[in-house]
Image (cartoon, rainbow, N blue to C red; front, side, top):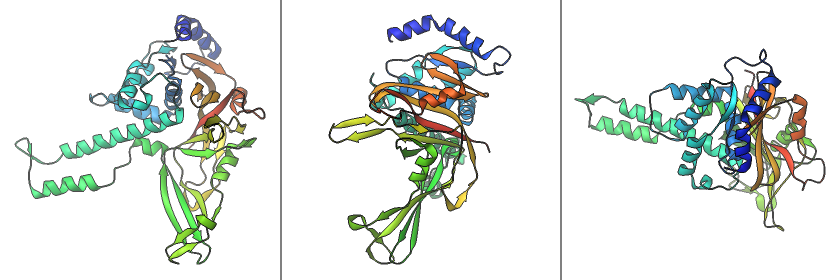
Length: 376
């Protein structure tokens, strides 16, 4: 634990009372808690994502519902559920909690995070969502297996049971509440310019990674994401109808929008001349409200309006150094979570996290992962 963390914990009573005062006793939401998380040695990448997910209400509610189920063997999800439950059941409204059990489990399960180096918040988000989904799917599979007919307490051993087991192993995994919340579908359309045949392939996502440019907006980035690309020269497309390589046009469209849209801004780019990744601190405006326009013809819920609920912010000049913080919207006001420190901020202060208009090599506090929640 760093000296800064020890000092912060010593002062947490002061910080907590200041936060309660800023919000005001009459305005403080009923049954809500605002708790910072202790940093266990460059774990801000983890703390920032956990805070963002905690304030994605559908995710929080499902994690807490999981906690309420019967006792399960410890895994990353049980540790996450224990952490969320610990926050929601605190007697105090504000304070600091050490996510020690969760961090220990994370380091035990994945070597990538089993060190005291700075990690990438987006990699952690991806790992966490996929791991939680895998745990839920495995538990469903076990429940189906355990629910099969038994004879004197022993599973019936016959051809039908064996066939059922084979079918269970071969069938596609059922979607979980992680998929219900975060999963959307992209359609990759390719049109042969010789025969005009259009082929399409669907691809599911839990978050969208978009390229960034200087002085743009997230809407512009999403438009670029869906731009038509021409495949020619050595990149020609093999057309099944023509049985040969042909020039073609390719585009990506959103077919199904998720309940919560997680947008990852690709701010880290590998520079050949430097032989390392560098940060693109470009100014990218992200609105408080977002509607997606570039959707496929058979898109579902093409009118969805989204509200910004959380932003994971990267502070610093590169992926392996710097710091992560999170800003979240809760009950109509905005809060900044910086490990164990929690502060109320004005909505106008969000503009400080768009990035820099010039001198992009400077340290900057830039929006890195945006969480938009559908109003429907």
